[in-house]
Image 1 (cartoon, rainbow, N blue to C red):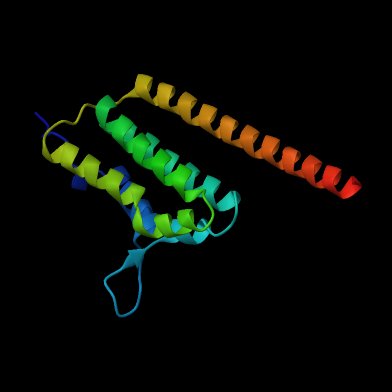
Image 2 (image 1 turned 90 degrees about the horizontal axis):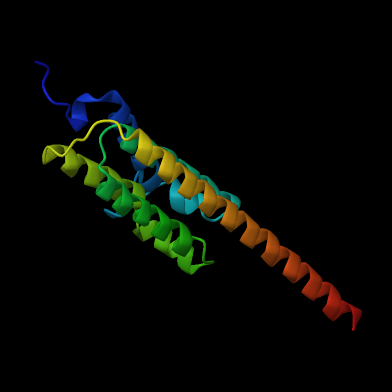
Length: 163
């Protein structure tokens, strides 16, 4: 009988851990113990940076779901990602928040504890479909909001200029 899977013996989960580290804690500020990754740096690029880090986090979440994350754990992970994305999108405050709040590292640690507690649940294909649909809906809403906001600002600027 094969032994139950562990976090450290699954190459796909180690890949998740490496990407999460790259996004959240790959680099160290010289002379300090403060770590940061690409997430806050990409967040400096308006819209595109936040959407790209959201997409990477979504891929990591889907990978973790496929490899044993329970429904309850996935909800906690998705909330970490949404919190990081929503607050991270706020100019200046969001940039500072991205340096401190490391949602990918948090999610990897949640999954690691999940495995250590023996709560591995196998493939969650149904859950993957639901979360994928929710993430796509969130992306669509976000894109629509950005489009509508930009159109409103454009019209507002042109109306003010006409007076």
